View (spheres, rainbow, N blue to C red):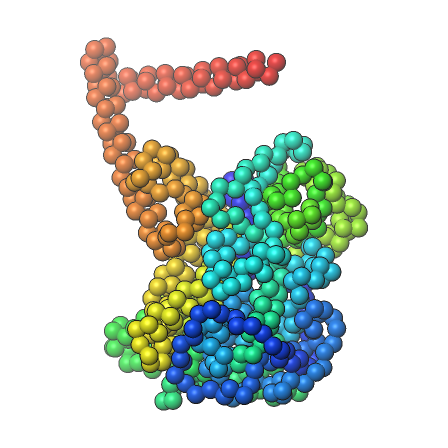
Length: 609
């Protein structure tokens, strides 16, 4: 169990997280029509569908201005602030994947392409540059954006805005269990071609939202905050997807029946689109003659795993001393690996958000636990951090409820339903926050979907969505399942942890060092490579494992045969039976091992003295 929890010291937060902001019920509208420069240097291609060019970007929300979530705005937009009956594209979900998809579609299809983005949360995202909005460092869940996410942000022209409000992490400082002195922390520089950058998830959402508002204000985009999407029909005779767009919470606003030629499900853990796709395909299979079902295409399915190794967390704001580097991930594990502390920078001034990762049954994980017990735990296990936390903050951490990490799930065998519906991000593949793969793979999904649209456009002047949807699903569906299965293997409990993670990582380290051109590094190293996708990583590691087992099996067989011959030879020379000689050799080997350990221990004592 200690080794299993030690894995969490490699924790880099991902896209699945909690936000302290709740839903706001009343619906008000804000018109964001304003002048802008060209948002893209690329030439958009035709969508080949009729559009209404009279409308421009409008934003419908509940109670937030773009800079202050608590101020109330009640300006009526030109379009009346309500959803329309038809869009060229509808995006379900206003997180990083959803907002980046809106930018991608705008750049791809141009100003006349009608886009609706629907997000259940009613708050308009905060301004990423308003420092007063982000000074509660334990309030917001942090993301580590690596090369996958950064490449996507660069492609869509957002990286400069992102870089301005994020913090680079150039390594980690780790305290092993029982090591509590400041000088015991070992610093390991980041060995990456692209250094990860840290920011709160909500700040990334703010970056994308305000980039969209600033640079695409004269595009046909409706940002509908406080609205949800429910599919009612996937492509009937008119080749459109029909949905119901409804306000969330208590509102007098009516639900709108709308249709679209392109539905993107990027709603993360809500999974509205994915669940509807699964239900629709189950109904399709049920309508097929049982004798013909084995010959029908495999149904769309959401594979949901029960969390057999649950962890929950509480967040702790920490300001590190001035002589500590401000660009490191700080990590510590308690004795017996009861609790792991992971701290990432919220600012470049030494302000950190730390997470306490615990089992659900731990008494310190309870809401309103005893702050004295929490203080005593820090004093004993993490004194280097406990000294940085005053009693008021300790009281707040003790009384707050814990938050859960997401459970593993993925969809398959495809990411689409028909010709015009596709899933992205956590809606397609949900993982626990190891190595920052959640948000990064979600933004990579958007980048790959954009590439599929462009590739389809270059091959045909007709409606490009169906071919792009098929192409994207073919390229990315294997990655979705591979990512989740590999991540889950890193998180198995008990003996499964040794079989699916610890032993493979040891074998990878040995064989890669001996023959680096034949055997790849462990998953840790493979995830850093930019020239290989998740499915290819999975295939490579499976091939490595087969070759490793074959070599080990051959070596053990050869060793056994050689040992057998040696025992027979010695038995003949001594005139003894083979069992007696074998037992004698085993006893000698055992005594030699004990003697070696004794000599090593004596030398260490002499060196210490």
